Length: 370
Image 1: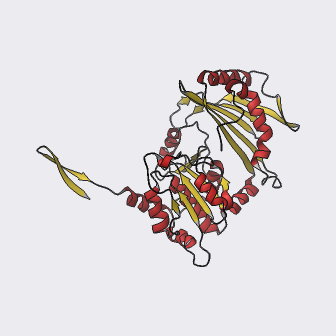
Image 2: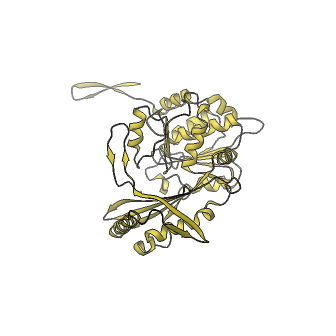
């Protein structure tokens, strides 16, 4: 739509666009909407979804796509009205802040749930009974079913581990080195928009479910049985003293990069031993331009594939955030369904003790666990 306006004696034309319709058109080119619609509107057994826009920007898009185009039940999209203060909530799609969605999914009446953050680029995916899909598992499952997305390339693509920051993915996308990408902080994307895209991720999952005709939890568990499971946990210590946080990281780096650290063992209770295979302050060489990015997190990697990563952010005068990432690989199919907190407790205790987090922060518990 065009409108003619003027400033003083000068006239100009303003083009008014509808971003919702443009986005819906793009999604229809990527995904098989009729197949997803048949899943959501099956008269015998409709597949019930809940989409939480967290009173942020995706509300109008989600209403149009999931309710109007795909014929999900009325009011399947919740918190759909964008508000300046996000309705008093925190627009972060994780288990802590997307509590409305988690509580609804725990009731067991819905088959699929998704939440999107303030600007709609990040997402959280849940199955029935609030079955939580970690961001890493979400990316892996989408990649494993990439042929289900009509415009997707073959699965045989290289793998890159980058620092935090979507710009590193953009370089790889621009050079056609990757078709899918994702970050641990609930961001998933592809080369369709050169960005992370929460609604795209939800539609990718619904495409997989519609094609396989399996519930979300069965798809994820099947993935673990095929490839093994990476048990994962992230602990955020927010608003800690900036100087104490810096001192902690400096001392930790000194310890893990000492010559005697690699090859030593760390003991977790009860009597679980981890042998250190490698440790470093991660730096990344961009394969597209050769640029080097240093100081991207302290990594402690074990011989069994487990690892601990420490990152520090927001070191201004108002306080810092210490992020601790715990990951432990399990290929024994008899253990893949164990509770992740129980499995990771020994490694988490090691991570806290190794960095002396309690001594430097005075905290007995993290602010947020995801």
